[in-house]
Length: 322
Ligand code: HEM
Image (tube, rainbow, N blue to C red; front, side, top):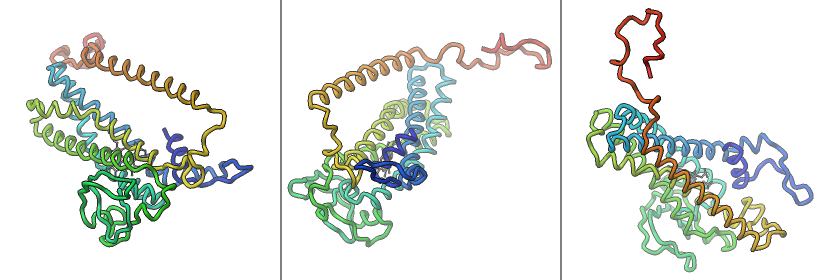
């Protein structure tokens, strides 16, 4: 994962390179690896993976509890998954803010796109929801909060925030995908925070296991971190357009001259088919694992099954403890 984040962060914010014969060549690896962008994006991605794991464990615990399977294991899974998520989700939101800071500093066009800000504003409002109309450079049905845009962008109440019309149309990314993808990611993060904190609080008070509606909520929330991760990548990558390497190499120029449209369509089709197969098989396999419950030899054995004698007695207990 780290090399993908270093590579991709270089594409977002190219540093430590020289141009030799029209080719970008790495010149300073330390600069590339320790670029300020890597060190906020890498933790953001890593935390996304851990949060996903935590939600999957909690959802499995909720599912077992709902189906009255392996109660001891289910309780531990539910508690530990929710507690880990309760700790990690706020840290993730903090890193999300830091990632937003880097976009604000190094990719102002992407930032204005995510914010659907068409004109310079001082102080800037924050568009919570709208339908961005790129043709007329305006937002329809906008719900905005005054001043919040300056607070989020620059941590002040009166900063000037730049709008998309400051940049030529040929430099702007398509707006609809980054705008909505960003809101879906943040929305998933906020729902996960609510569920993780609420669920942890109730489980500490021993009041979660009896509430079926809440158990269903925890179970049904397991896709949220997956959705947040995907929409995060949509924000980052579509928001970088029209560049493959920001400011250096346009996507239109990054096309290899040997790739015909037919070959590109063919390889895309093969990728899609492979992933559909892997995901379908994976989903089916995980469903079967869930249905079967934990393997017998992993199940918790109540202490009553242990022999009633001091442990100093030289007996091999391993045959009695499953
Ligand atoms: C307040 C909440 C959040 C904010 C402000 C936020 C901010 C951002 C921003 C601005 C980007 C684009 C970065 C770029 O263009 O390079 C991004 C990307 C991403 N986000 Fe978030 N995020 C939040 C929550 C989450 C959550 C909850 C997850 C997953 C559990 C997540 C996963 C990702 C991933 C995987 C990427 C793509 C990799 C990257 O660019 O770092 N984000 N996030």
